[in-house]
Image (cartoon, rainbow, N blue to C red; front, side, top):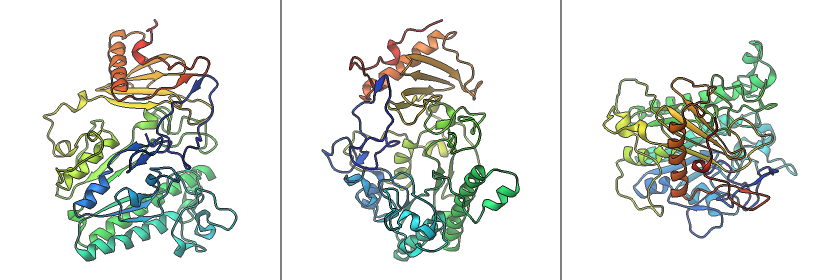
Length: 416
């Protein structure tokens, strides 16, 4: 889990809970070397691409490892070039006039590294990162080498600061300053993507380049960082970032393939972990060594090419959040697990020992809890979720009063 990788090694930032203690888990994130406390030791796929002749570039947010651990630097994870990536999960600010947080005596750990060329200028962070990404791409093009660019814009993320290039149009349309700023960050990202696409077209590389676009979580839905009541900004989806309801985990995935394919859409649920084997398959790399047992994901290439011989909808998808991310508790936020298989999704509220069941095909807003009526399906998914958690040795929180681990979902008694 990297959602809550710490900015500093072994320095928890989670909120305290009156009932539960979080597990002693991998709070220091990913590590390319063994025996680093509280990390997951694994082979990152960029290192495999690099070993197979790809020029690997990271630009923007990294947040894979805590400061003071090897995973903090993308250069240790298989990237040949790192621009502005470090241990922090968001920028101190987006403004070149303020050196992106690097002002003397005011720089915190979120201050964005590199980008000194833009300090003291009016260049918004999204624009600075885009320019540097395009500069970095010139080198593999000059070498005539294949490349992998991991471009992870800091937008859209707190602090929600307006992009001066776009914000006025949203104010003119009647949005308040908070929502206008949010919209301007989205449009800045859209321009950034467009600039990269145009660059590839200008270099005659667009038709031979795969572009993958996705978000790491659902939209922010917490007040006062968003206008209006919390957990409503992603309607009809319930809740938002940090939640295991659909508003927190359902995001778009767009893939532009290198070959010409007719445009299509597919409603098959997939996970970000699927990109590991998919990208290696697209690069035609089928032999590689991992320190982990195997990739967690599943190769999406057959699905992308319309091959449905495998039953994708039978695959269970699992989320496990055994800690307290924010205060106060919200729907599906803090101490929750969930599993989806086909149209059905089960949620486990660890703190209150409750199970919820939804049919997403019929109830995308997760408003009608079917658990009391469909005990058979609830028990089936409870066992499947518990089996997965046990197999993966996924850690669960413990009760403060006794030190005992909370029950697994299949140990919860179903109530009418």
